[in-house]
Amino acid sequence: MKVSIDTNSGFCFGVVNAIQAAEQVLEHEDKLYCLGDIVHNNKEVERLAALGLEIIDHEQFRKLRNVKVLIRAHGEPPSTYKTALENGIQLIDASCPVVLKLQNNVRLGFEEMQRKDGQLVIYGKQGHAEVAGLAGQTADRAIVINSEEDLLEKVDFTKPINLFSQTTQSIEGFNNIVKTIETKQKEAGKTDNFIIHDTICRQVSHRAPQLRIFSKNHDVIVFVSGKKSSNGKYLYGVCKETNPRSYFISSKDEIDFNWFKEEDSIGICGATSTPRWLMDEVAEAIEQGQG
Image (cartoon, rainbow, N blue to C red; front, side, top):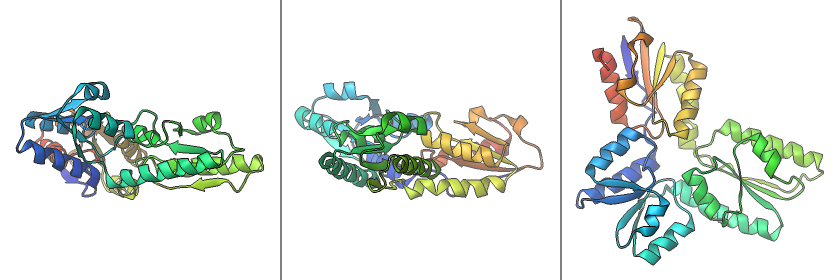
């Protein structure tokens, strides 16, 4: 068997920045709190926990006083910064620059829609940390949609619409939402009140076409990702659609050697939240013939 790792897979720069920020603090201190999983990968979270990173939720955050807390790449709503100021919490802000820029544009877009009696719509996953941070820029008055059904149910097509997207959504999904809005507005006789912001991160979105090529070039694909990762689920779907012999695992312990034939070319790849060391570990386990 020949095993190779996709050179385009692994952490995006926002995740790299957050992990480096955590590691720098933990070189000199025994503990650092992080608001939510620093990355949607349980193995990387476990590695950082061993260094002293403690994951907390917002309820726990509100009870803390005079400590350091890391804000991960997904970003946070304004209320988090307000709580930190009130509680003497020092924030290590590792919000992705792409997300911070998007937050600012959502805030400005919402103000514009307020003046026009319009709607600010966010195409994203309800409850996702990034979406919560974006909606927070509108005092949670943005309309969050994740499907055409949501769109048809929640949006008034007779009013102005300002559309943004969570940075990790698929381009195909975003384009379908745009087409549906345009169709519905045309039916309503309103064709000049739709503002489109394609705010999908290209470092993430370009992974899909790259993975299609990678999947075609191998007999078997082993996709490594944490089960919580939305990006992982999407990119694995891209692999599976391209190559039916694609398998999703979170660690080397989940490898099933019945998947492979002696003559197979095996490709290892992963999500933007998958550390390179984990893909290396999986590749080595396959080469050695043990889980």
